[in-house]
Length: 182
Image 1 (cartoon, rainbow, N blue to C red):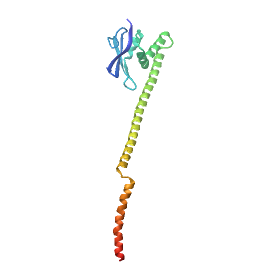
Image 2: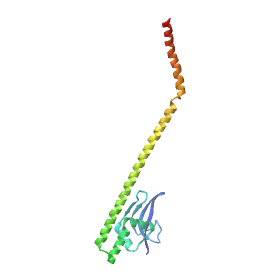
Image 3: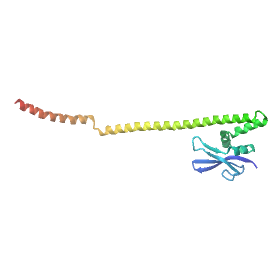
Image 4: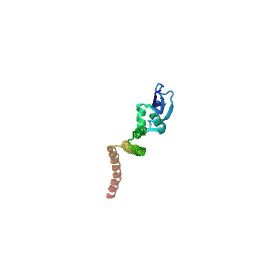
């Protein structure tokens, strides 16, 4: 029986969530499967991959063929690299301890890249928030200035209103000066 390691789609429309399963090659995509190995959620950044490493390695070693996407997932998690190292040990290229040391070094490097990406994504979100707040404050100031300009009367009307008030205030003083002069 030809077995495939492939994705089984779940989730809502536009929000897919996948199970990584081992199934007979003739079975439908979301149909019957032999064993569930893990899950893959592409909706998060970076994508969330939860897989049983030992079961997946056993299936790959026993001849299960992964689909293109599953091959990328297995490679990302190091399952295919581990299979490659085990093949080198069988051929006598290096010892089991050397293979394990290489795999651990690879895992540490991969974890560093993933954590670096998570930090960069977090910083990008914070920077975007700060930029949005600055843009919002600037827009708010512009609106306030526009409202203030709309509510204040034009300078010509202010000058006309002040001129009669000044003439009226000067008139009583002038009449007081005329009466004092007589």
